[in-house]
Length: 504
Image (cartoon, rainbow, N blue to C red; front, top):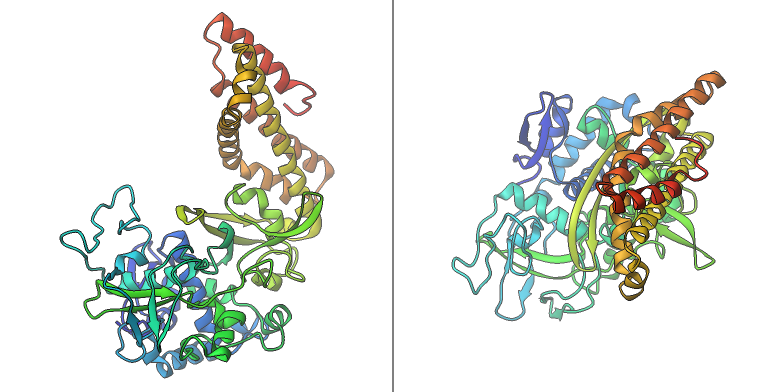
C-alpha cells in the first residue's frame, strides 16, 4: 500500500458518491473531488497530512493568492514531490514504513492489535456500542484484520488524537519507552476545537488552509518552518535535532510521531509505545487549526483553548474568526482572508473525559462578510450573550417550578448538589439545541449590518423574539401543568422566566 499511488483516501466525488483515491489522483484530477468522507477526528488528521504535503512540496505559499496565480506550476510541484518521495509513503516498507519505526523491539510477550489504532472499533479495554469483534490474546480468534486503507487513515488519526495515560512499551536502539505518564497526542489536548476553511472542492479546501510562510515564521520563530517527519525521521530517542524538528516546527508537528509504532507483517498486530512529547498551548504555540483566547479565571487572565466541553461551537464563532496575534485568536489560516469577505468554516473536535474518548463532533457554518470584521463579531457576541442570559433565566424558572412543586427540594439539593446540575443540564441542552436550529435568523441580522437602520432593527427584533419564544417553549416542554399542584408551580416558574423580559 503506497499512499502516493494506491487508492486509500476516502472522498466524495462531484455526485456525492464515496470512493477511494490515491494522493496522485487527488491532485492530478483535483476538479473531481468535493470533500473527504471521514469521521471528524479523522478529517482533522488527514487534512493536517494533506496540508503538510502541499506546503512541503511548494515550500510556501508566500502569499495565499499563489494558488490562483500559479495553479499549474503548483500542481506540477506537488506531483513531482509525490514521485520523488514515493517510497516514504509506503505503508509497509521493510526499511522505511510510513510513520512507523522499523527498528522497534518488543517488550514483554503481549502483542497489540492493529484495531487499537481505530477508536471506533472494540479492542481490549476499548468497547464500543455496536462493535464487539475486537480481539485480545485471551480470546479466540485473538486478532482481526483491517483493510490497508483503513489502517492508513487510522494510523494518521491515532498519531494526532491518541490519549495519554498507561501505555505499552517498546525498545528503540536499546532504549525503552515509558509505561506511565504518557502525554496526549497534540490534537487531543483539552478537547480543542479545530476549524478549517471550506471550499467547493477538496483540493481548494486544502490550499485555503495552508499558512503563509510569513505567518508561520511569526508564530513559530525564524527556524519554525521545519520539515515533515518523513523527510527527517529521528534515528532514535536521543536524536535531538530531528526530534526538535518533529515537535517544535510547523511542518514537523502537522504529522506528529506521538507514538512509536511498527505494524507487523500479519497486519493484525503491532508494536506500540510512547513517542515524542509535543508541547501544547498555552506553553507552546496553539495548533494552526485551534483557537486560543484570554479568559478571566479566579480573577486572573489566562490563555485557554476553545474546546467542545463547555459550549456548542456556534457560541464561540466570534472568537474563532478573530485574526491570530501573539498566539491568541482563531486558526492561522484565517489571517489570509480579507475583512468583509464571507466564507464557510468547518469545526471539528474529539470530546474526551480524562483518558476516554466520548464523541466526535463536526459542524459547518457560513460566516457572513459583515461578521468578518470587528463590529460584526461584536454584534454576534452580544446576541450570543443575550441568549446565554435567557438560558440562565430559564434555569432559574425551572428551579422555582421545582421548589414550588416540592418544598423539600432545597434540602435535597444541599445533600446532593448533582440534582440542581441535572436540572440545569436538561434546560441548557433543550434550549441551545433549539437556538442552533434558528441560527439563520441571527446570521440574517448580522448580514444586515450597514443597511438601512429600519431593516437592521426589524431583523434584530425577529432574532430576539425567537430567543424568547424558544425559552418559553423549552419551559413548557420541561415543566408539566397537568394538575393543580403542577399548575401552581408552573405559574410560579413562568413569572420568573418572564420577569423583566423585554423581547418575547
